[in-house]
Length: 237
Length: 126
Image (cartoon, rainbow over all chains, first blue to last red):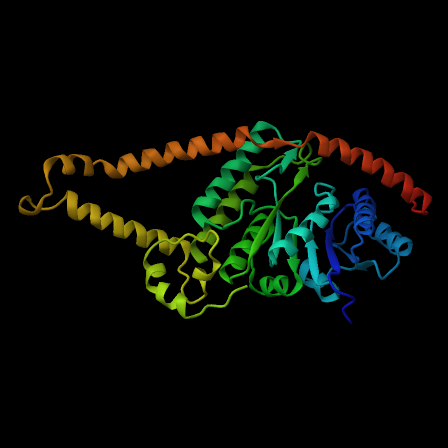
């Protein structure tokens, strides 16, 4: 596939049961990009959702055009699969549940140009970044886990478990080849390996609007697997 | 990204034996030089530990002066406690200053409304 113009942004959206949120995210992305004059494409990789997400994605493809929206069936890792079809120079990874607002993407791009960064990471912990919808306990766990991560891994980035990031396409490709973990730990591993390989990471404060937390509390299982993952990274990187 | 060059080779021995900060200096972490974080910690602890043991547990002939010895013996515990206090203070401070994004949530609600209306106009069947 031929690359189309400098600075095109490919947004990879892995989805699972996002029938309600997907059209809203896509609408916000399209609006943000057209307002800032940024060339874009959105690649939706659905993990076999039973709630009709696929059907909504296909409708969106018709509405916005298939050069702007691409829908892929699942095949292996969503990111790796999606990247094969990405024609942009930059790839944005974000959540499709509206916890990440597309309005920050132009700021990511501005930051990237400013420092010629390989990765720009959205951070909830610095500047005027923050979270909506978390109670004290959730915030404590978040800050505690992040502190532990900073002490053990000294990663040079303030928000390691965040998943709202902009990558240079080649950088993401190299990292995907090397990263083996899943979930929170995968996001951490990406940054740690990026630093190992000498890539530069810039940060932009973002707001994370959690509308899901009420339904799915952070369980003991998640905490245990986070700690296991953290210790694995500590011992192997 | 910066590729490792000869200045890095000079820093190579140092980075092998001391925990090195990764903040703002990705060049020190060239693939050849990187120890795992665990290995760095163990090396650092071994170094400090042996230095402490050598001074604090020395035989009578080689002991450092008494005041120094008195301060040295409980030093590891002091450091641990100090680190514990620092951790609590830091996490507490960060918890207290964790921003609540009220306006972001309100703005999102507005945007959702606008999006739904516009998508309906464009023919999306929800």
